[in-house]
View 1 (cartoon, rainbow, N blue to C red):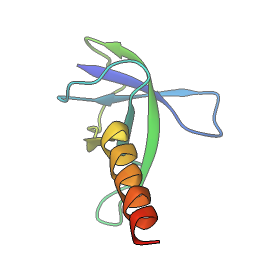
View 2: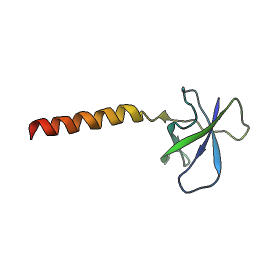
View 3: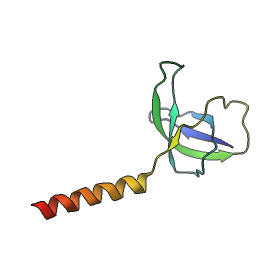
View 4: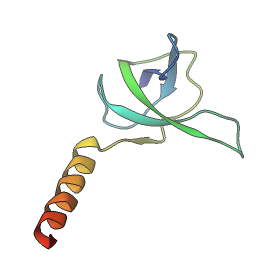
Length: 83
C-alpha cells in the first residue's frame, strides 16, 4: 500500500510505502533525509492508494494521538489530586 502525505508548509503531496493500518487523516512519521543522517517528520495522510511508482521510502510509524491524549489527561488528573 502507498500513502500520500502532506508536509506542513508544502502544497505538494509525497508518496510513501506503508504496511501499517492507516487511513486518511492519520498522522504518521516518515524519513525526510538520506541515510545515515536521516531526519523524520510527522505528516498527515491525505490519501491511501494501492500503488505508486514514486514511493521509495517507508512510513516509520503511526502516531497514536488517542493514546497520547489519554496519557496527558492521566497526568493532569494526578496533578490535581496531588494539589
